[in-house]
Amino acid sequence: LVHEEHHRGVAVPFGFFHILSLESNIIGSGIFISPKGVLEHSGSVGLALVVWMLGGCIAALGSLCYAELGVTIPKSGGDYSYVTEIFGDLVGFLLLWSAVLIMYPTTLAVIALTFSNYVLQPAFPNCVPPYMATRMLSATCILFLTWVNCFSVRLATRIQDIFTVGKLLALGLIIAVGLLQIYKGDYEGLTPQVAFEFYKTPSVGQIALAFLQASFAFSGWNFLNYVTEEVVDPRRNLPRAIYISIPLVTCVYTLTNIAYFSSMSPEELLASNAVAVTFGEKLLGMFSTLMPISVALSTFGGINGYLFTSSRLCFSGAREGHLPSLLAMIHFKSCTPIPALLVCCTATIVILCIGETHNLINYVSFINYLSYGVTIAGLLYYRWKKPNLYRPIKVSLLVPLCYLMFWALLLGFSLHSEPVVCGVGLVIMLTGVPVYFLVVYWKNKPKCVYDFTEWATYLGQRVFFVVFPHIDPTEATTSSKWNDKSSVTSTAAGPV
Image 1: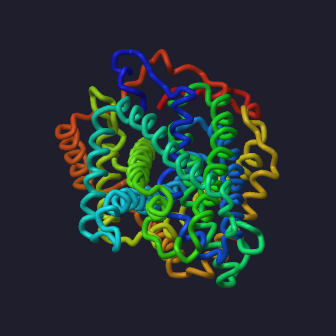
Image 2: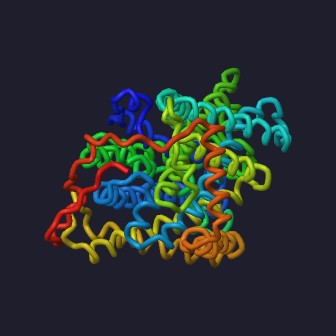
Image 3: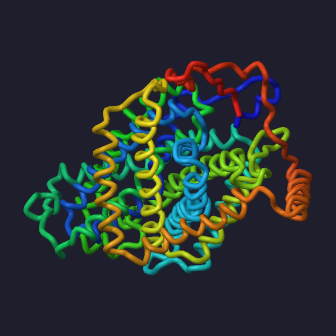
């Protein structure tokens, strides 16, 4: 994909500040909803803070692995593109299937529900906002941002830049007020004696679930890998974005939780439907309305970022032949992937109608971690399979090994503690096996199937005014990134 100017002959890829803006989409609804789940499963304030800090360390390890994969296999599409390249079509399709059906629609639904809860909570101070009201507002927000992303890539990235500032201001306000409380001496709940006083003794499985809840807040650290082809100088900018964004996000999340615990008891936090709103009502007085507004701005930008990247995943899947070719088409003027965006929007609205927030977080976090582990295992396999392949970034083997050890423990204990939730996620992923063999692997289908597909594609093109992206022949140059030094001849990878 390219920006709108491409049809006029000028490509407009992501610069470093756009990269940081996209990476900052890690900060979304998670920090405003996950603290309750992390505390509930960890059993104490002190252990909850440890989970938040370790969650950031794990995200950093994963990001470094993805940075190597991103410049070694320079394709947009993230996990899906790497797994397809390394393990083949079936494994790649299963990851794509679970992402399109569960991961991205569920994440979008959770963020949209958080947006609605924070917008409506001031109108319902003593109770949970009505079910239908939250769903209707969430659907309206998703439909509006889908239209924005369909209308203009530039407008979508402008929204991302603007709301990045908004979300940081929201968290800055929470942190500043919390630190002021600590300065005044209100930190009794944060002293080691009180913080590590367990109101319930957590099992290892419960601690694993606490990490899953925290991982939802950190999800998004791999977003840049979905738009690698649009990044300027990824060899330099990918590591820079990781080194800046992951420690910054970890610091912000830890300080935000410290601020929460400086003024709220564990019982108050667990009883709250909107943690930041409860925090604001206790400490901001007449300015408490700033908190739901700030959180709404933050989550609004988060929805925009997830729509942007999830549509690129559908686009990449269609480009590889794993999804209908219509999803690989873009609008002939605005160069936006309208069919892919509409698929993401529709799946999200369906999830909105059937899911509950905390269960949705467990679903998406388990499948997210499953896909991360398979992808990073692929890094090790690719090192063994193609040892002489040119790798502009090459991390120490300790990085993927440490990540995979933590990954295996986390998923194993999570499956033991929540067998139904995790089992359903696995079943949904495995339902992609028969779909793959029927739709992708089976080449000699009856003529009526091909006729119907051609008719549906033609109709979609006429309705949405979309075409396959134009390839500039001057850009089809040999790339050293794909040169395998073990081969006698070099392979060229022009733009796809």
